[in-house]
Amino acid sequence: MNYKISKAAASLLPSLTLAVDAKAKAMKAAGEDVVGFGAGEPDFDTPQHIKDAAAKACRVSGSGASAA
Image (cartoon, rainbow, N blue to C red):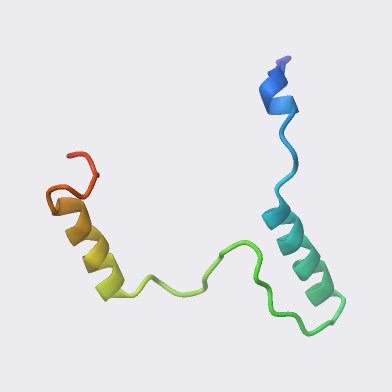
């Protein structure tokens, strides 16, 4: 298939967050000791109390969240 990219999509700049993340990964691969603060890719689950608070906030009237 032949796809045409819109002018708006073509004008988008690359993500700086992903560029920082790629640089950190390259530095790690080169053996450097790196703490990456780029893209958020946690290696742990969201704590239950945070999930519960988020769910409660969605149920509270006036939170701005629409009903499902």
